[in-house]
Structure formats: C-alpha cells, structure tokens
Image (cartoon, rainbow over all chains, first blue to last red):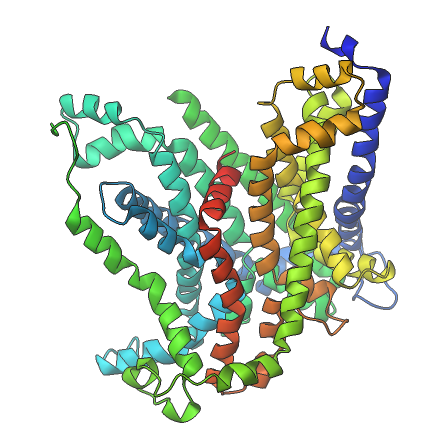
Length: 293
Length: 280
C-alpha cells in the first residue's frame, strides 16, 4: 500500500545514497580486515619480501610469553577497572540524583574528566605517580608509597586502573543518572509500604529497574578497557619489565616498529575474535536477565 | 513516609559530593600551579610542588607554544575535527535514512545495516597495520586520510543512531512531499534532514569528542608528514620537554584548554549527546 505512492525513482535515489558510502566503508574497514587476516599467515616484517608460513604464527602466539602476559595484564586491568568504575559511578549517580543543592553544577563538574584527552591526562597522572605520591608517602613515612608506583612491576597496573577509572567514572555516572531518572517515584513509595529500605530497596527495586543502563555501562567499559592504549603510552610505555603491555600496545609496538607485522597480525586476529566473543556473550547474558524481569 | 510538599535538601550529602570533587579538581589544580611555576620553585616536597606559584607569568606558555608548534597543531586538530563532524553528519545521516526507510521490507538494506553496524566490533588494532600500508599506497598518509578513516570508524555507531531515530519520524511527510512532486533527494534535504536535528547534535558531540582526543589514528597514519594534532604534539615533543616539567605542564594545560572551553559553553548539549548516544 505505502509503496504504491513512491515511484521506482525513489529506490534508485536510495541506492545512489547507499552504494558509494558502503563502498567507502568496505575499502577502509573490511578490506584492511581481510588484509590483516591474510598477513597473519605470513612472516611479513612490514617491509621487504615475505613467505607464507601457514598457521605457524598462531601456534607461536600460544607459546609466546610476552603475548600471554599482555593478555593477562589486559584482562586483569579490564575486570578490575570495570568493577571499580561501575561501583563508584553507581554510588556517585545515586548521590547526584538525590535531593541535593547545586545538582546540575555538580553533575557538570563530575563529567569534566571525560572530555579531556586520555593521553594528556595520562601525562599529568604520570607526574603525580612519579613525584607527588612518593613525596607524600615520605611525608607520612609510608614505605610502600615512598617510591614511584609506575616503576614497580607489582603496582604499575594499579596506577593504570586508577587513571582509566578516573575518566570512565565520569561517563558511567551520567549514564546511571539517566537510568535512575527513569525509575518512577511511586515505585519507591510502594516499596517503602512493603517495608523495603536501604540495601534491600536498592537490590530489589532500583537495580533491576536500571539493569539496561548497567549493561550499557558494562559493554562500554569492557570494550574501552580491553582496547586501552593512550594511558599505557603516557604512563608506562608497557614497562616496567613489560608488566603493563596491553594487547593494543603490543600490536602497535612490535607490529609497527618491531618487525613482527605478520606475527602481530595473527595476534590482532585473535584479539578481534576475543572482542566479538565477549561482546556477544555480554549481550546474551544481559538480554536474558532483562527478559526475566 | 515523606511529607507532601517541598522536600528538604540533603545537606550532608551535598557536602560529601562537593568534597568528592577534589578527585576531579586536584589533577587540574596540580596542572595549573606547575604550569605557572619556574623550575627553581620546584622542590621535592609536596608543599613545594603544590604551593601557588610566586607569580603568574606566562613565560612557560610562550615557550611551550614555540616548542610544540601550538597554533599549527591546534589548527590541524580543529580542521580534522570540524571536517570529520560535518561530513559525518551529512554522510551518515544519508545512509541512516536509506537504511531506516528500507530495511523493514528489503533484505538488501537489512544486510547493509547488519554489515555496517557489525563494524563496531572491529578493534582498531587489527586494521592499523594494513591501513598504514594502504593509506600510504593511496597517497592518504596525511590529514585527509585520517578524516576518511574517522568517517569510516564512526559510521557504525552513527548509522545505528540515525536509522533508529528515523523509526520515530512518520513516513506520511515524505508521502505528502512525493505527491507534491518532490524527488526523494529534495525530500531528504528539505524535510528529513532538518527534522533529524536533535540526532545531528548527538552525532556531532560524540564524533567531535572522539576525534579531538584520539591519538592512535593520527599517530600511525600521519607520522610521516611531520604534522601534529594537539594530543599528538604532546606525544612527539615529550622528549624535548626533558626534565622541565613546568614547560611540559604548560603545554598540557594548553592542550586541555580548548576542549574545556568548549565543554563550558556547550555543557548541556554535550551531556545530552553523550547520554542519547549511549542509551539508544
């Protein structure tokens, strides 16, 4: 019925709008993806000749200590930073959504870290961890804080978690606030008649209602933290002793200038598969939970 | 139960939240005081680093501007961001329109939609190395290449936003225009494009924040040109700052100021845009 009004010309216009743009997308997204996949079966160094090596890169990946370490580090960072970010953001959002003074000014101020560039923020924190925190540690006589966290193989990752969380909390808080605003006031009134209060009120009423916003935040955090790059570049450059090499950083560093173009392509293919699997899993899990409600 | 009427302001919580702002303000305070100080004012104690500078001289900023070629880097950043945002709004809304109006009863457009949106899962890390080669071969190892890549990278998210938004716009308007003899092309520019204004704002904010702060794409694509964006300049001139942290911090502050000013002016639009983009 609807279609009859429009002529075939309309369809042609739509095709003319679509095809050039999709071609551009293919050329700069799908094509390099395919090329990366092909390079992963070669011993290409980024220049010169190369041979096919079959699946050798992939076999080597699983026995390469440095690659394994980077996966462990990246996942540790992603999990800890995601939990930290979400807990703090949710608390902050509930605070900023209650009956407080200067509400919009406070909300605006808490969002500032998110608009700042991660690299420059990283440099600023680099100085903080290298000079200010140790100076403060010496002042209060704490041995653990007395030296730089960034040069300590056991603590450098904590510093990176803090910097990642500092910026992400701003973003997640705003999303949680918009979630809390969708919870109608009468739900709480009904809840308090049934005797719900404090933690119970949160667990039984608030949290289920903002679950969609929780899943948005989980996906956002998970993806951003797994691809962490700028913060590593600014804070540690992968050190000390390669203890903070994220997957993206390793691919960049060894693939671009370390002569491991082919090998790191294989790493990137695996990384791509990991991202897809995690994203799909996250969506199915949260999708199921939302259905149950 | 709470009483009907105006509820009381929760002052203790307000105070806690204001105190919590220290976590946001402290790094910025630190940046400002260090940027204004002279190296001789810096001592190794906390007080020495964090005390107010003796005078608010702009000498550090002047030097930092020279060292990092500030104005040219700023110009490049603005150029890249503005062109990317304008082209993204034009191109992505067009594709979003074609998909949004056809995917319900066309398998072809449904496929195109899934194809483009699945691009969200592709990490830059896998595209990076082939793209460096490809852009170099095509003569696009420069700012134009970076802009094209941004348009491609932001396409999945923006097309998703636009085609979703179109579902709420009734098709009757287009039918009326069609009866009046307007072509699809004019209908789009005269009717649909203006109606999508709220979504343009969201797309513009998200794309602008992403491109302005991005380091990785210009780092790998433009490295041969000797040109910098604002964040890239911080990375490339890191060694020239040496141990003169006052100079470095003046430069960091300069790099942060444009986006801070932009945020203060457009705070409402930015917050709305970010929430809209994430929630949809």
